[in-house]
Each structure stands twice: as structure tokens, then as C-alpha cells.
Length: 367
Image 1 (cartoon, rainbow, N blue to C red):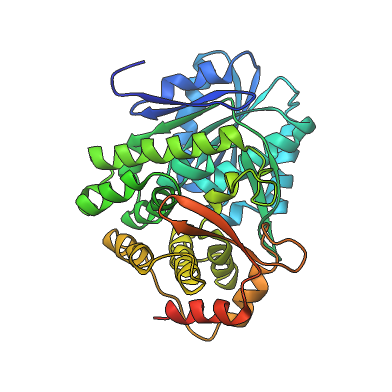
Image 2: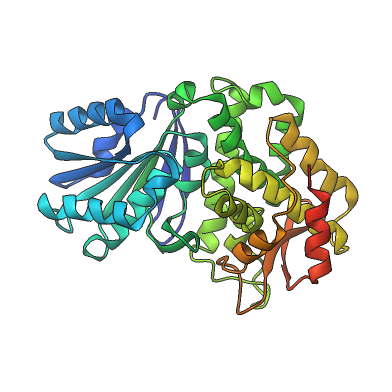
């Protein structure tokens, strides 16, 4: 390990490492391991990077196949997954071969789902190239695709053999993508590590600078939060009702309302922006329900605005938003369930809030 690298171990039953640093391309063959064929699933925008990856794998004696998929959320569709399966089948992929997810969160979600379902599960290596992918989608073993009814409703748990977070990839991202990824970082601050919030508040410029030590520290802290959570609750089996705390559901903070926003916006809204609005919504919901103090609720708006994330949403859309939330994965029967805070870094589940509270919280975030 070089001095530039930080390694975070995810201590699940099949433990693996998340490597964070620069110039990590040469780490890929070791993670691929004893395989013959390697499928590199990548978006169109990363065609050149995928080709460089292919050449590296060829040089190490592998038979790589690049599979180009649509950019962003359009990749997370059943027909795209079926296309990937067809390539694996035509190329003769066996249980000993490997899938590599190269790209942002949508690509790593898709690649993970393809790896989980091909021959009931093949080895997976994730190489996230966006901030969102590094701190959230590529770590933790959740995979999935979208349907017309909602986001990530079809999926599987399938842990990677390793994750390579090359921070150099962040230098080429549009500012909007960096800002979007910070929503998941800030989420980790509110549910588990308030030091993240302190870092953002002390240097918001550094937090949005891909080359800064501040952003690197934020990535490491967010990955550590996720690694700690999934190590004790990989499959979201813990719940308040079971006496085991919120568990992995804490990582869904802001996502119930955020996913509803994405569905209403037909997935043309950045995920991080939607989650930021979702966090503001549940902060106001918890405050109105008497669970959270006003200062902590207000801090959501202040921190998110510091890095350029939205904290308000459009009026007149409550009915479709409510309909979308009813098919959220945390819903049980007809009961809406929200991850909220009772205080900083103390998440809880709020079940079946009164309809008047739901609409009042929506009114608080209109802009």
C-alpha cells in the first residue's frame, strides 16, 4: 500500500476492502483473481476509460469484454440488464468469471445486479468513478434496477470482492456531479458522523473541490460510516420493532421522499439533489412530529446550501409524491415508514405519521 492509499475493510461474512487513493488501475487484476473472462460494464461517456481497462486486463492474460450501457439512470432498466446477460451468454461466461462495474452509481448498481443474477452469482469488482458511486452505490452489496413503479424495486444483495475508488476520476466530473454526490456524504454526517458536518461547515469550498484534502477526508469518513453499518446489518434485517435499532435503514435517510421526487421528475433529476430535498423534508417532518429540535432541523438547510444542494421543491405535486412513497421499500402494508432523527446521529423509524403532518412538512420545503 502506498502512502496515498486508505483502505477501509467492510467486515461482512465475505469481507472485502475499499481502496481510496490515486492511480489505482494496476490494482484491478489482483481483485479479478483467478478468472479467464472479465466483463467491464461501463457507460458511453467512459468508453476510453473502459478501453484502457481492457488493455490492462489483456496485458495480465485475461479475456476482457467491454459492455457499453446508457448513461445515468437509463442504465438501470430490465432491457439493459437483459442485454448484458446476452453478452455474457454469447461470450461463454462461467461461474469462475468476473464482472467489473466501471462508472457512476447507476452503472455499479446495474453491474452488481447483473453479477448477482448471472448463474446465480459471479464475482464482482466495483470501480466507481463518481463521488456518489464511491461513497454510496459501490459499497455495501446493494444492487438493483428501476421499474415504472419506482426506483430500485428489483434487486439483490451481492457483495463485491473489492472496490477501487480512484480519486483522480473526480477531477473530470462536472461540478454538478460532485455537488450531487455530497448529498450522500452529508447524509452520513447526520445519521452517524457529525464530524462530516463540521468539515463541510468549516470549509465548504474544499468540500466541493475534487483535488482537496477536505473532500478526500469526506470520502474516507463516508465510506467508514457505510462499512460500519453494513457490517452489522447487511440485508436490512434489523428494525426498531425487533429491538435492534434502525440498522442499515439509517442509510436511507432522505431517500423515501427523494426517490419520490426522482420518480415524479421521470429520473431526470440528479439523485443527490433529490436526496438533499428528501433530507430537508424528513427533518421538517421530525420537527413537526416533536422528535427533532429546530436547530438540528435548520442545520440541514444550512449545510446543504453551503455546498450548493437544493433544499426546496415545487408546489402542487403532493399527490404524485405521496403515491410514489407508498411503494417505497420501507413501506409495510399501507404504513409509510420514514427514517428520521431524534437527535444528531441518532436515527429512528417514524411509522404512519398523520396525513396532516406529511402535508405540513411538504409545505415547509416549498420554494
